[in-house]
Picture 1 (tube, helix red, strand yellow):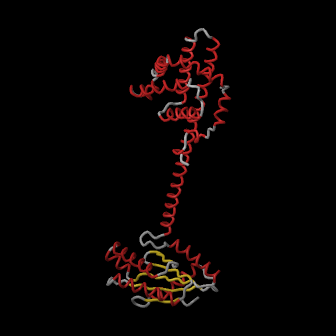
Picture 2 (cartoon, helix red, strand yellow):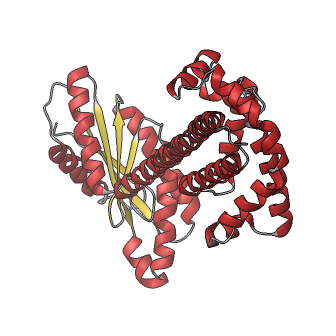
Picture 3 (cartoon, one colour):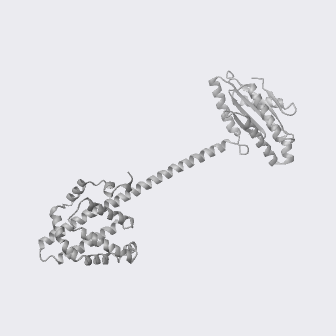
Length: 363
């Protein structure tokens, strides 16, 4: 249930038994109730004087003057204070009374009255009421003493309730602050995690083409070779470079050269499956890892890439030489050995003009 759907008594879990118990703490009993009720007529007769004296004592303090703010607010407070003082002598100190006192605490907390100011106000009010009663006791000292004692008890009872709301408000603020901090920390962790993932991914990629860089390529190739040996399947490596790239780069500039490299990367991405890995080895050299594949499947990938590059580069004179190497599970080839085989096959392909593909045979 939301707080707005509960009374203050419900929020603070103050039962009838708790109210009676609190009265016992202060020794507040039926005798005190009768004493307070007997004083109501006297208090009512001097209520304006009591209220006037109360605000005369507290308003001169700069802090209280700043909280009250203006004459209209002061008038409303005077009227409220009159009602509050008279209610002390009504003889009804039940749940409704407790609810009103808890509300006093909430209001004072919200308008910024610190506990020290509230305590001093209660002290001043006690003194003023004591003086009024002492001055108009009609020489009945016993009744006067009993009344003064009962007033102190009921004001302390009120003060305990008011402080409950102060403390509850502080605890609620602390809880909300903690929740806000936890939510902020959680959102910060998510942002950091996403940025870390992004930075990690950026560290793995070639900045121009978006393909894996050489370092990440070797990491993936070693993982795939280890996996293929455990599971008993082939790993195919395609290694190729762009023939005529240096000449184009020198004659048409690096921007045009970068466009060719990006086009080549796009050709690779569109020609492989999600489980296959494309990398820029360096310069105009590229690699593709084909897990659980065959030579014929690798040749199909090569032909597809060559066709796309041919169509995208036009009459630039760009072609590519491609070497294919296979690592069967029975051959414990490491990454460097497989790259060396594919590289050798690529240089064999360079002996033929235009787009060419060679398969490494020394496995």
